[in-house]
Length: 222
Ligand SMILES: NC(=O)c1ccc[n+]([C@@H]2O[C@H](COP(=O)([O-])OP(=O)(O)OC[C@H]3O[C@@H](n4cnc5c(N)ncnc54)[C@H](OP(=O)(O)O)[C@@H]3O)[C@@H](O)[C@H]2O)c1
Image (cartoon, rainbow, N blue to C red):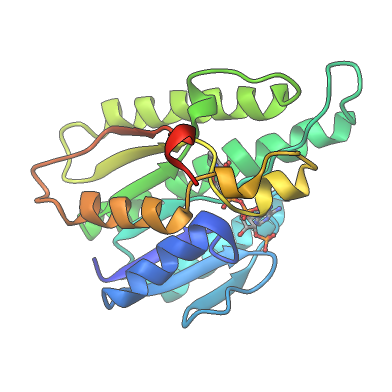
């Protein structure tokens, strides 16, 4: 790994992944609305906005020919019962959780191919099971799982690894911003998740971990 592009490294899991990569000497480019305060290059982007997303992809392509790791981690979750969803939020949430990852992958695939790199897409346990009150989020995470699987089929014969990374509940701003009453102390520590991702990325390139699901073991969390 030489240079990584990460969406959503200003906070939460993306921040911990960026921190772990920096420790390993990898140069990190963060894409989010607010800056990541680690030693990274920040590119400002609003992933709910098509033009902003395309501009950010073009900037990466122009300035960073040596990118060999793409981590698509940015995400947003809102809680509404069906019938109460602000309808403009549907497109915006899909754009951040699904479409922007497709656009980044498509836009940067030539660099990743050239540099024999890896693509990590952060889904969720919500890619496999559904929870009440977060139907748009669940639908988006199921959709991104479909994209990950399609990519793995398309790139099967190429030296590009596609890793679907699917955690359960961990400590971050996501649930807080969504107004969830989940106790943060009962959630996983994103540092542990980032540590596991480093191990996966450091495996020989002949090994692709296609799908990793990290369930929260609530009974063991003090
Ligand atoms: N926390 C959990 O329990 C959990 C469980 C399973 C999966 N996940 C997934 O893990 C990933 C990371 O989430 P997190 O829990 O670490 O949440 P977080 O702390 O809220 O971080 C979300 C990141 O996404 C970025 N982002 C959100 N909206 C954006 C926008 N419009 N444009 C650009 N960037 C945007 C944020 O940056 P700015 O606000 O600076 O733009 C931030 O860096 C997400 O894909 C989430 O679905 C989370």
